[in-house]
Length: 212
Ligand code: GAR
Image (cartoon, rainbow, N blue to C red):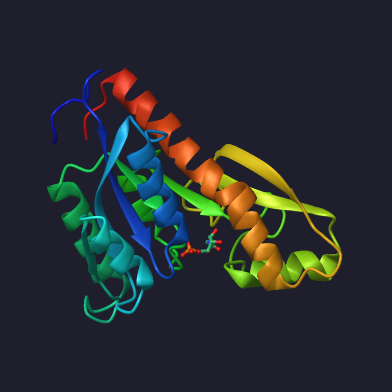
């Protein structure tokens, strides 16, 4: 159990990543600029050793390391280690920022309403199992949608199925490739609504004086 949060305390955040970490960077920048003022990033864990996100965390002076399923002997061991690392630091909120691994019901129940995820589409479009990263934008272009966007939502046992916290729409332009669309969705939506959602949830946690 960590100390109960109060009006002066900040919620402790762990960010789980797998890749480039531009969303992690947006969170780090938001904490520096004061957009994220009710929470503080204390831990970054990657499920890939080569994730550039780990370097971003190190540059910002945040504790960061990789934990792979292989090194933990599979999904169960991986989640057990994650829980140990997160709980032992008194983390209040877990943010999935480009974390490309599905978490079990046991895990999501353990952190009920304490895990949020950013998804690069307007849920319920282009979401669920198999829709991640560039594949989401490929599917949106294939369908010919004129508007897409990003969603931040709570994480429960259904992939991309938890309660929606924020969404932002982004225009699809003629001649877009999955890469150009991905970049616009990040710039115009993800990097804005992820820090804003983190602040909203952390502020609510502080107000409620919630303890872990
Ligand atoms: C982001 O677009 C994020 O929304 C997406 O992967 C990218 C990670 O980029 N996440 C998912 O598709 C999860 N279902 P980043 O590592 O630069 O933040």
